[in-house]
Amino acid sequence: IGNNTIRAKVLSSTQLSCIAPPQEVEDTLTLLSIGVDHHVDPKLVPLPFHYIPKLKNVSIKPCSGSFRGGTLLTAKGLHFDNSTRLLCRFGKLNVSVMAISSTEIQCKSPEHPPGFVDF
Image 1 (tube, rainbow, N blue to C red):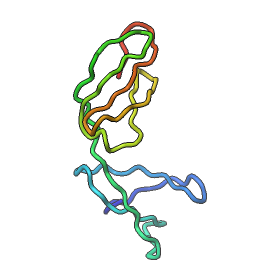
Image 2: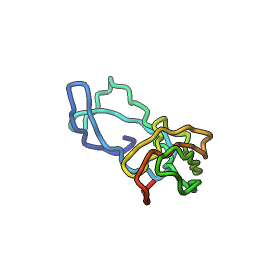
Image 3: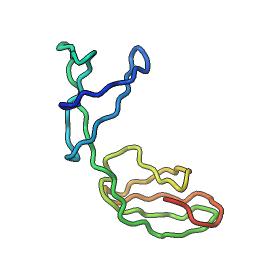
Image 4: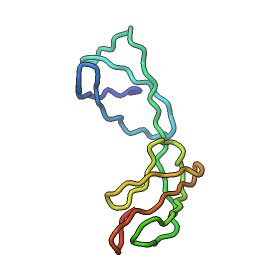
């Protein structure tokens, strides 16, 4: 990826898996080339790989709700528009998100016993 050589894990005859190395500049596009033993087949066209900015959550309101769930929460932050896989996580339970803008999302709290939960 870019100028970095990374070992890939073979998942099947048609799939590989690797971990992208850290990138200092967010929101950049680099190229992914696939090869064997550091030799890249020149017939293979490099594939684009896009590093996206990290999500940054700034605030969540309200910060409490009914243990029966259904409280509409609004989270404000940065870069919420860069993923189609956004979700709200209450402890270990994931709930779907409604994107309002690139800086605001909403979700409804699930049913949960009274007490604190990590978000």
